[in-house]
Image (cartoon, rainbow, N blue to C red; front, side, top):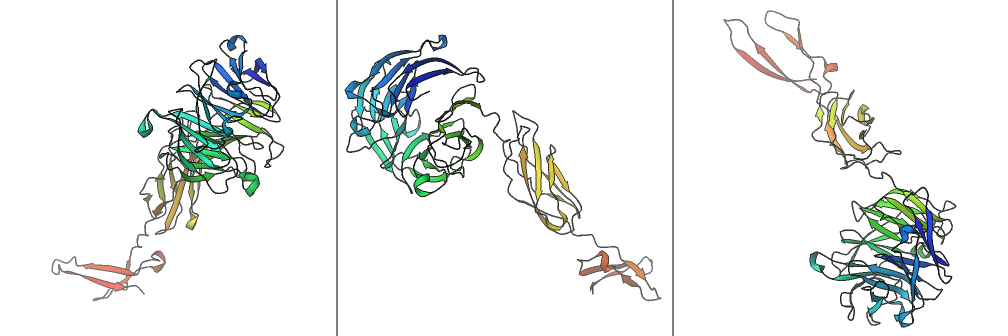
Length: 464
C-alpha cells in the first residue's frame, strides 16, 4: 500500500487482524502507485522524484521486505502510474517525466533490473494517465500485446505494443462530456472495456459515470452505454473480477456492480469508507483490490487508511424465474408456476408473485413454493402476473421482477333453465338472467320421449 512517504506491506491472511510486516521509505509524494510481478514490486511516485523502487518480496512471509534498487534509467524521476503485462513480462510507465508522459515499455526478464524496450512515439501517442496491457491468447488478436490507455487529452487510445520498437496506435476514441479520462479495465472475456473519467462529475454536474466500450474490434471501439451509482462522487480506480466491477469512488467508497449483462451492470453491494458525505470531492476511497483467492477485498482510503472487507453473498438466485405459460384457469382461480431459480450459498429460494390488482387479484408473499393459485377472481377477466426470487442471505439478494405473464379466467357456466306453465301444447322455458350476466344467446333442444313421436327440433332464441 502506498503512503505519502513509504511503501507499507500488510499481511491480510487473517482479515480481522491485518499486520504491517515491512516498509520501504521513499521521497514524499502526493501519491504512489504499485504493481507486482513474480516476487518483486515496483513503486512509482507522481511528484516526489527518485525514480522507481524495485522491492524484493521473496521472503515476505518471514517479514523481510528489501529495496533492490531505485531505478532512474534514462533520467526517470517521477511517474503517475505503472502497469505490468504479467503474461509477456513487460512493465509500462504511465505519465512519467520521460517521453512527454507517453507509454514507455521495460523488459522484466531480469525483474531486478528493468531494461528499456521501446515507447509510444509523439506522432501517434499522448500523455497517458493509466493503462491496462494484456496479451491475447485466442481470437483474431492471438499473440498480440495490446495496451488500453486512458489519456486525459484525447480519450481512449488502444495500441499494439507487440513490437516495442514500432508501437502502433490501433484506434483513438473520444466520448461526450470528456474531461479527464482516468483509468480503464477490461471484462474478463475482453469484449468490453470500462472507463472512468475523473473530471466529468465536477465539470458537468453529473452523477458518478462509468463508460462502457465495446472493444471486440480494437480498431473501431464503440461507446455502448454508461452506468452510474446515482450519487455525486467522483470515480477513481476500478477492476473487473469474476463477473463483477469493483469501483473505488472517492466519497462513496467501494461500489460493486454485477456485469451479467456487460453493457448494463447493476449495483449489488457497497461499503462507504468515507461516511461524511457523498460530494464530488477528492476524499475517500482511492483504489480497490478484489483479486485475492480468499475473497478478501482491500480498499485504500485517502483519509481513513486501509479497509479489509468481504463482500459475502451478493448474488441473487439464478436464473431469474419467469412464469410458465399457459396459466391454468377456472371461473374464479388462476394457477401459475415459476421456473426454478438455483441458489448455492444461501438456500432456500423463495418466490414472490405480483399481480396487477385487477378485479380482486392478489399478490402472493414470499414462500418457497414456486406455484401460486390466486382465488376469488371474476369470470372471464384477463389478469397479468410477475414473479421474482430471493435467497436466504441477510439481507436477501433478490432477482428483478419477471416480464408480465397473462392469464384469463373461464367464462361462467350458464345457469340451468327450468320449465314452467305447461299446457297440452306448450311449455315455457325460463333462464334466470342473474345467474347468466354475460350470456346473450341460448340454444334450446326439445326431445320427445314418446315412442309414437321420436322427432326433436332445435330452436334458438335471443335473450332479452
